[in-house]
Length: 240
Picture (cartoon, rainbow, N blue to C red):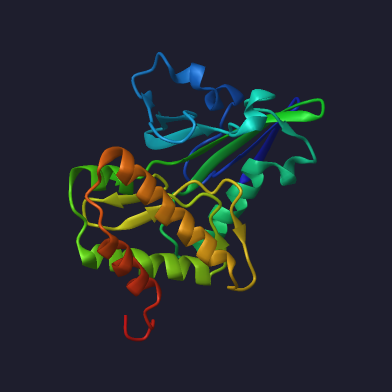
C-alpha cells in the first residue's frame, strides 16, 4: 500500500517500490525551482509542476481550493485525521483504480502538514510521458471516430467499477501518441456501489467542458464526435 513516515506534525506516505524515502521539502515547489528538472504544468489551478525524483519523471501537485472559499483560504483544509485528508483519500482510490486495471498514473507520495485544526497537502504521481490533454490534442488535430468510441468504452468500464470522477473534463483526460487514453486527477473522487444517475452527471460535465473550450478556442470537435463517444459508452461489451 505504501510506507508511512512521520515527522513533527507532518505525515508522508510513499511508494517504496518506486522511489526511496521522501522529505517534506520535496513536496514544496520552491525546493525544485532552481533545479533543471523543474517544469510548470499548465491547467487546473496552477498547482502542478513536473519534477524528477531518483530518475523517475513525476508530477507534484499542491491541493488548492477553488470557488468562493478560495478567498478565505487558498490551500488550507480542516483537519479530521490523516486518513480523512484529501491526499490520503486520493491515494487510496488511485490504488484501487490501478488494481482494477484502469489507465491512471501511479501515486508515488503524499504529504500532509498539520497546523492546529488545519492542514496543507501535496501529492506526487508518476508522469505519463509523451501525452497531452484531450483539449490540447483537439486544438491541433482531429480525433477520429474510432478514438472517440474507445474513449466511451473506457469511461463505461471506469464507471462500471464504481469510480466517480469529481471533475471529468477535457484537461483531465490524456492521450498518448498511440491513441491510448489516461484519466488523471482523482481529488475528491469516490467509488460508488452501483450505477444509478451519477454517471450521467459525470459525462455531462465532460461534454460541457468540451463545448466551453470549443467556444473559446475553436477545437477540432463536432457533435458527431460526442455521439461516437456515447456509442462506445452504450455498446454491448460482448460486441464492442
